[in-house]
Image 1 (tube, rainbow, N blue to C red):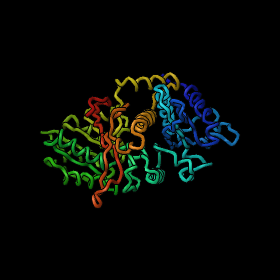
Image 2: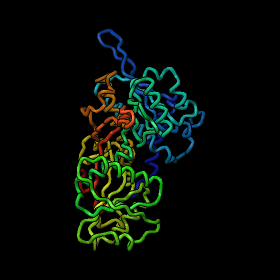
Image 3: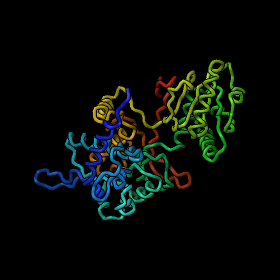
Image 4: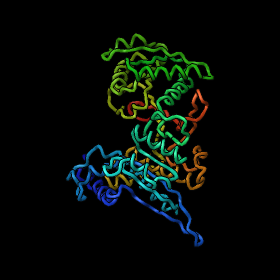
Length: 405
């Protein structure tokens, strides 16, 4: 059934219209004070940064610029905001008292560099951001100065940050994925024929370094990994020469390039009648539609720090609300915005100034398990930052999720 884009656009426009007053000041304020026994109590303050592009959507008089269209570049930021709003609604229903302030990182009036220099930022107890590399570095530095946590929601990158235990990465870094994949191979395919198919490139060399480091530091028996560098126009015949028909062939894609990964899967799929292949990919494979017939006949695995269980009741409620309102399924950023604010707001209310020492508390889990651990600098032995080390390993067969490890 074809969805009428007009019905998708109208609810989205209503969201944006609700932003017009907000866009004039760049901030949105929620509860500010809690009154208890006739005493004014200062409530926790949370600052959220999100790419909303409100100045791009509205002109100086508040008129929407795109008529009946909804530009794609706004989707992720609006979805993240919708998740934040869902968390605010849930927290309000629970009677939570918080001061939540949201800044549009794409505002032309006040850029993030200006926001963090304003004295208003000094009252914050927690920073949450859907950010770029430069914004992550800026907000991490600000969090360090204020001695409050900065939760980087989306960026799987340390942004060059060192010696800053206030910086928290939720979207696990590439090195964490490589270490996790190596352990996954040890546990599930230690006796298999493991070939790492890769292409030439700096990024691919970095991946190999991460796997080599995991091999050197493992406390278990190392797995044997054969590295094969392919040209861009590699053929099925080239792949066949490395496969063994008498055992399971584990083909690891040693590149983040989605086109390379899709080509590798397509070629191995054509060989599935003669060889048993398990194909293991990078976290970027979340964006590939494996339901296409070109990927049939092979088991496909990839790692991700975020996985929504289909039977999760809260996730089901969010999905139904989106279907009823937008005629769409919620994107990953909706869930991420929801669970990040909900989870860490609860930690802030429970631990207050001691929240930094309680980041591993799993009591307020919503959709995903977070395993937030310190990343130790090898030279100084000090904590460079904190990172979510929890990875889910998704197994797909003919496009369907068959197992989650």
